[in-house]
Length: 299
Picture 1 (cartoon, helix red, strand yellow):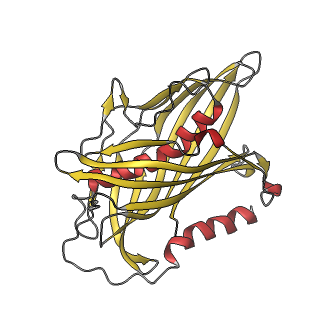
Picture 2 (cartoon, helix red, strand yellow):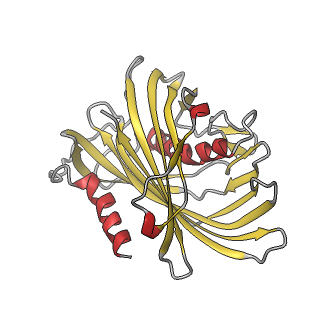
Picture 3 (cartoon, one colour):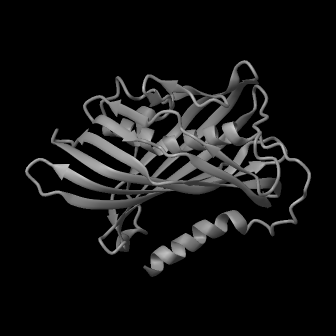
């Protein structure tokens, strides 16, 4: 428990230790993304999954990492915001006892290094059929666990950018709030791995909580909160045994937006999943995990 407490302190302090929050001005702010064609950003996404016991204490941990670039291809009223995403590296860790969390053991997924795809954002959240159109091209032709892990890890970045794009022009002064309803469930499947993964996402509430700076860059901080959302996944284990998880998902977090150019310069998101897992010839078991995602600019 002491290790978890120290870890949380580090995560919480990383965003605020950069500077003291200045007095919030009363003038109107522009937090919409204002990137121009050809501008690039580089990020490192750190994904930590904590597995909890029945008492809510962490007993195991898993860490993945994604390093990627995003190039601004277009940003106009007609096109919306379009990024070209290029994956530099994707690293998958192994599940370790919380007492072994300092040990490094991971696999570099060469098949996804160099992957590139386009991400488009408009104020109106895109849908495809009966699902949110998250636009990650790994649902067909990639019958691998690595494809599922990548989709699951990269989704927070897509959600963050969409929330930013939808609410950027609505949050103008410190204290402003915006409620964003997700029009369709966040759902997908991966050939031979995931039959269905689905979150009936409840509305997000975004609040412009204050001003600060990150690496000497003036920023605004926006908090994220959502109600508990129904969650379901039906997938195959490596030996093709099917199992189902039914439960709930709840997302909280915050991100910082540059006052200069409207880019996200730092973000952290936490998702708590509480499920009951049904597997062939085994008793139903409870499972609780906390997925912490941190988005950090690479220099």
